Image (cartoon, rainbow, N blue to C red; front, side):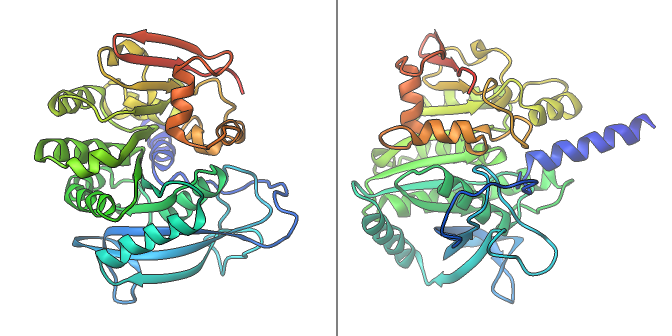
Length: 368
């Protein structure tokens, strides 16, 4: 009986650590037009292309590229991904793929990202590169970034790096191996964007995707990538599912962390805390840091969002799923995950608790 209970809990934890695609249990109008909003997504993928042209869970040593337009339903609560696995999706209530096209090569990919950034946004050409988490299908990763890109009004082209997650609850070790497999592909993607004419790149890693981001940055620091690091506008880890000791070791090997380096976590991240207690002998995960002094001496900003209103993600990915957090970021003159952290570090968020441990800054956000 105890084993069955633990298994049931583990299923919930692993599911939450994965794609974290929330089904909307309720919705409220956010658009008076009744017409779905279209969110463009550009893709660089280390997934294997299936015979029908779709991206499956298999691994590919060769990068492939695509562009998508994702339809976002007009009646939806901010922070939610509304979708159904039964029948044809309803565009008025569910996320849909409106259009998809393959990009022939890296040149076409770079040009598509740069052109969109120039036409769509007023200001320097920017790209936000999003690396998804564990247990995530390709479609889930598309919809996840579409939700983040639509709700957080960040003026940058949205680029999805799709690594080969198996999209199965009990494939955690497989996905960790896929993270190691995908490091070279992510490095090539970042180098291509740095050579595209884009002037600023913000790299975002979510959950297990944060491990892929850190491992790739370490690799690029050691090999030397001056053009990329010259254009890197910041690294953001969201609810990182990564061992703290491993992170410190990788940071030490880099010499200095890329700056700015921001982590959004929560000591009340139920998914990461349960995972830690069940599978890692209570070793804390980076995204559920119990004590900020565990990162003392590292040049980074750690933002604890434990006081932010709870979401269906039980403390996971709060920054992109909490309506109050989304509103706070969008209230800035320019919505930006890095700039929000810098404002918090400078004491510009009333009620936030700011502490410094050497070069490391810990911030606990107030209730929102």
